[in-house]
Image (cartoon, rainbow, N blue to C red; front, side, top):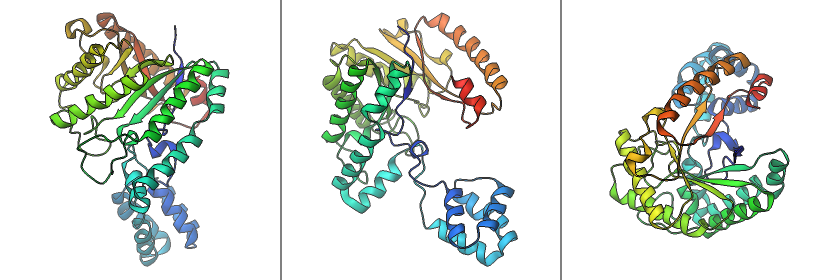
Length: 348
């Protein structure tokens, strides 16, 4: 069977660059500039220096370009106003969750996120995907979404948020009804296996490793018998591992625990952007039923011809690695990164 599908981004791992719940820094600067009667000047400054999304850009190139258009006093005042709004746009959902918790408490946070999630992906969306010929969804999960713990407190135990678990059950039921499989994907683990929310602690902290094992045990126990589950994606994008050996040691513990529980689903092992050839021979590791994975983002492709050339490079590199490993490959996330006709044609 060939699995062909899409990601359900920002559903249970709320990457705000996907959901667009907040302005980028440059976007907020433009909006506040419009409100201050400085649209022409702000637009000229943005054209001069380009879009930016951090404090250094705001107080440096943008401020100087705006000062040249509107004067130093107006530029300083606008920069100060923009700085009052911490940007929630992030690869991680932590800034947004902290903001919601500070304003509404943990119950209010979870109620709001439940409302968002149930509107973000609906049965109609899954029906449409099936009608387009897709038979797979990848379901990115952040561990925080599965917990009722405070996001502002150190993680010491896992207290399950049943709202979130109910939503996952709903999704798997809906997938089954529409003939769609699901890859359940852990995008962020307790302690962090990448640096989305700060320095990754998983590889050096035995307590975080035990919590991650506990989380996966719960996922397998609750959903291991669901017919819509095609695979468990154990640690998506583990690029903060201090070494390949540390990455693979964590994968090994997860593999052994899941197999010891009697679960025989496919297990997706991600290269952490080190190259598929960096992953070990599964026979040497004693791994069974594994799928190797990477994510491809076509930075620098400016035409369909560029994209076609990159595809051929990947085909050659990935094919050579796969010959020695003898496992299926799964490209779990990819994008041409541009809103242009050639990009949509290439993606298709």
